[in-house]
Image 1 (cartoon, helix red, strand yellow):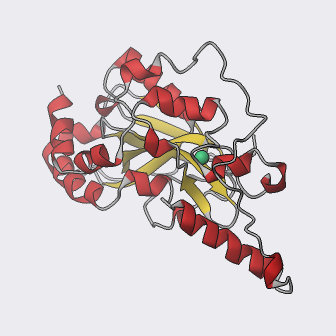
Image 2 (cartoon, helix red, strand yellow):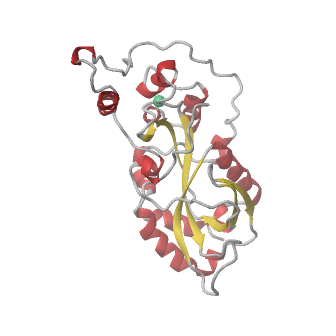
Length: 283
Ligand SMILES: [Zn+2]
């Protein structure tokens, strides 16, 4: 699919956050400390980075969100979905793709993943991942229980795409200093809204203006009267949209994860008691 991972960086979403970013063969020891994932459907847009699909705000379940991706978009609801299926814009706007974000605690280790000090030291990072990694974590959780109670060892096998081998560890180091870690997380998680880490929220009008000024920069000599918007009207019904397949490979996921985190839920999720929940989940 036309989905440009290589431009993924902190700048893409317009916000700075401590992102998981490993070098080739580097091993990180981490723990998925939050019971929550943020999930969205987003578009990669040339020179703008990742932008939340406008259709994503109109659904209220994980499965419906997955369906936006499966259907290759909602051209009647989202201008970017419409552009993605238009061959004129194929290098400008990517198809809507699901992406996930969660908070992790990353221990300070050497490059082989061994703890540096006897005393535990760590910091918060945000792990952004595609569907494949997400499903891997979900299946680990199904088999081994809450991911909060097991550290993970991430071995970077491909730095460019931040592709990791994930192995689950018997223990979670952080539990030894549970109180301090929970206090730390209460403060640190507050600083970063996962939704903003995943993408920028840009309304249709702003997006149209941005495309228009990008076009003017690209073609400064073009006469003003030719400057019909390069952005197609959302109302136009798009054609050539692939049909949704009958079977739903994501159906089982909905059972083990909370529904898609809406803006309202996000606010709740960002509240300090989230880490209180985390504490409760530790046996
Ligand atoms: Zn869209």
